[in-house]
Length: 394
Image (cartoon, rainbow, N blue to C red; front, side, top):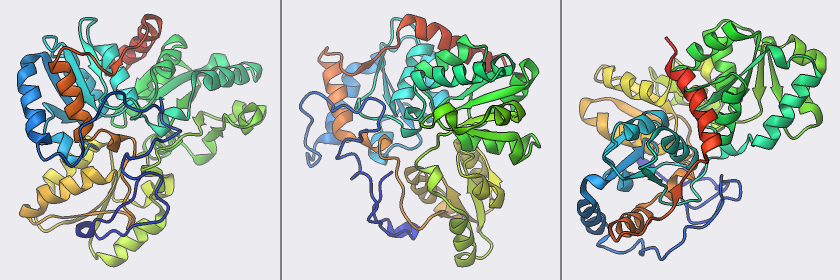
């Protein structure tokens, strides 16, 4: 996450910034590497025109995807916007596009590569644009977890369910072990399916989405959930706990959504009488329990679209999106503010800036393929199996 001052949303800077809006490398990012090549200067006054010219030269050969959390300077060049799964499917629906430029993070580009044809090439403008949540579950750690479940005598009862915000390796593990992928909007349907296949679920890698779905949407208790910590021997849980649990939650979280607190909710209610609190299900359970509305990014957008004029909203999700929504709905008399007083960008998402996009488009226009994201065939096959099980959900 990254902090900065944004007066129009009533937020204040904090000294706890992890990065300066993509100016430093995040050692916990999925690949943690610098972008090769000579990037144009951020101060170049011709960046917008250069991006337009390169995109025009490429024509139908390029399809630019823009995640909702991207900067406005990047979003303006997106052919479609949306969440990660929607964008990956949009790319698959454009087989004539030779290059898919994914303005998002690494796991999103992997998903696009899995779902698109072999003739299409998926490009990530900055290879250091990873996801700290996806990093919290590695293939080696999950394999070790499965060994722990096997030794506890429960592995045969467990169905893995992995959030879309996971690496291709984790998606492949999920497919190989009879599980499926879920999004924040279909997590309940995915869990319903999983419990038809087995008695327990291993939910990867976001504990909060798993817990919120199980308790809030499916009527389970907090006692039905146990958290597996890959950094502790045996996951930090006992055999008895594993045998008793219905939901085995991986100890992972979103660094953006995880920062919202119950104090944030109470504070905004005190400051703005009559405010509606709308949060993403990646938030902590106590935040979700105190909110008025909970849902995916697309749900948040639809809720604001349907809201009456004059209504007030505090949104618990990434700041770029909240600012965009605040500007969009201001003419309709809808007040939209950030849930927390401290600004919180997704630092790795913010690595995709205009200089990186210009460099990418100009390189492709000159016939030079850069920053291709390519998933190996075996991983792709099992990951696609897990995705197809999700697509087959009623």
